[in-house]
Length: 193
Image (cartoon, rainbow, N blue to C red; front, side):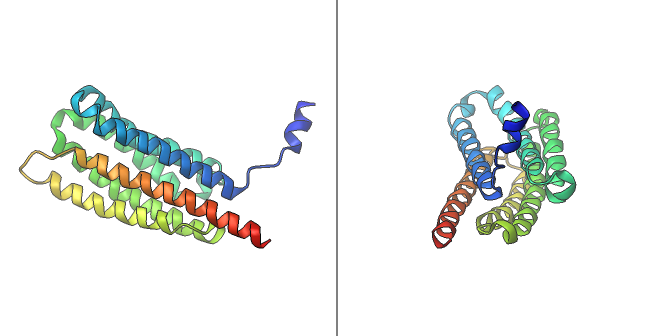
């Protein structure tokens, strides 16, 4: 009986899954930014945990997305993003003792690499899902922000780790725009059908 029920369920449409995924990414990122820019500034231990958690969440989210989009084997850019984001979470944990310049440098390298991988993923999805322009922009902006982080981190002044909050806020914004754009595009497509 249970197997018949499961067999008769209709699978989630790819565009519905992607909309939900983008809304989830927005919600988590926006919550992270709000907490990081308020409470975490006065609680260094919480800030440290959040700096580790941010790339770890990106790894989990990419793994989830890839698993529902054909697996890591079919999504090389997401597989690489999972690897880089996991390595970044570990590197941030190790680097925290060396200071914020070192942490910002790690975030810089991660922002460049994950931005490029996100851009590749969005470009690949453009044909099948459409409405990926915001994710392409997000990937490109992430790579540019990474370069900015690396420049700040290499300076002699103490780096302001608050820049990571701004970076995450832009990421949240792009996920929200993508989710809304897909929702509107799907509604238009259904009206025409």
